[in-house]
Length: 422
Ligand code: AMP
Ligand code: GLY
Image 1 (tube, rainbow, N blue to C red):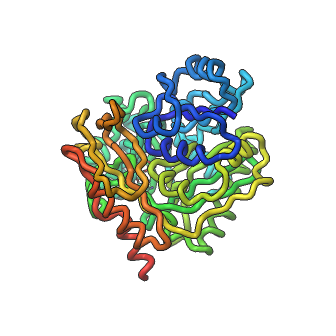
Image 2 (image 1 turned 90 degrees about the vertical axis):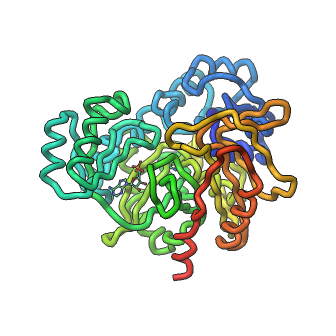
């Protein structure tokens, strides 16, 4: 079977790498892809939002299955569009993708079905939102309702910060339409856990857990980013926690989506916080996480294409999903200045003794040389028997990738290792 992957990040590079091992894969394509994905798949230029271009690519290249990875085309109905034209696609339809594309929808779903999450209120009126925030304590959490590239969340420590966040979102339209409605949440604390899960709408099969590091600088300082590094498995996700999540969060969520007439098929991402009152949902994403995928998928032993097809065909209960008894660590190397302004076009050099997995996020290839094109440039990923070895190996190899003004955090996995050591 010929398969097309939509997207251009490190997450898509990890997915393409794994799909290349699938027994039913004939030819792999990616649109638009990047300098790393191009080594595994034939690249087709175009935008992931251009439905006609995606459909044309399917006809031109005899593509029978499309993996829709990023949030925007999912929220825009790419899966609906392709299936109406007889092309199967991995991912939720537009209605089910609301679980990520509208935080207000997700919060209402959790309230209605008693799924544990932070207390909240939703506002479309600036004055009312401000009045509510000022009458509650701090810190408080202000979130743009829609998709905002992971930058729509502010943890406000003071009335002035809250006022600025509300103004930016609701009056200055910093996030466009995404911020016209805001969700104001109770502030929770505790370690965070990411769990990606395959689901066909009825059966849910959680993958190995992971831990993201979202803040730009060491010790969780600086602005929120798309993700500066990950480790898997997450030591806070012990057997008891996994059972609690399955019973109180995972199964109730897919049953709730089914009851609402929006069964969710694809990869459902649970962003969780382990609080003193139990595990609560911080966010849902309707897709694979980035950079969670870069540590989780290398631990999968089973055939990814077979699992993906089973989610689309509602046969997930029939496939065997096996994981390696190993740990992994991904370090995101960024262009200095990310998530703010940064320079592009820097030549990337990789030392000959580099000995880890490299997933490319923001780089293109020209005549065999990689040049930076984005903020998150690449992920260095190591897999080992213990988390400690995986982290050490990833850092050893991160030092072997160089480009002008590169930057990475030096404490990825530190908190997880401390938790393991008790
Ligand atoms: P989100 O985009 O919803 O995942 O939020 C980004 C980050 O903000 C999360 O990973 C948390 O670290 C933090 N965050 C979001 N909601 C809350 C909350 N209710 N309490 C504390 N921290 C939060
Ligand atoms: N790593 C967080 C996300 O993919 O949204």
